[in-house]
Length: 100
Image (cartoon, rainbow, N blue to C red):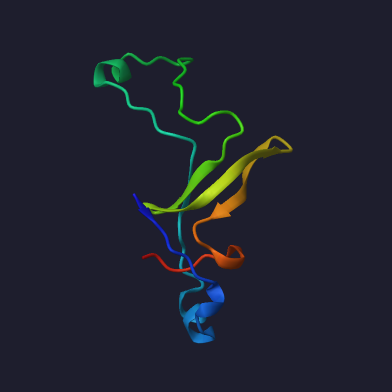
């Protein structure tokens, strides 16, 4: 896993932002990971529960590809799940920027 060093988006010039501003990026919000033996995986049934390492109310990790960019709180609004950004890695003024 790589951690991002972030800089303000304003550090990019208008031409640079115009050139890359519409590039689609996939943000991953990770609740946790669970390691399981293949034999146990093959025995899983509907209704089985797997525990995750995060406690209820603990922030989840946010990734852009394999790069950790911050954390967020999980919210439920009108029956729909969402996330609220809690922290961005080394981000002045809460802005995303470049990976080191």
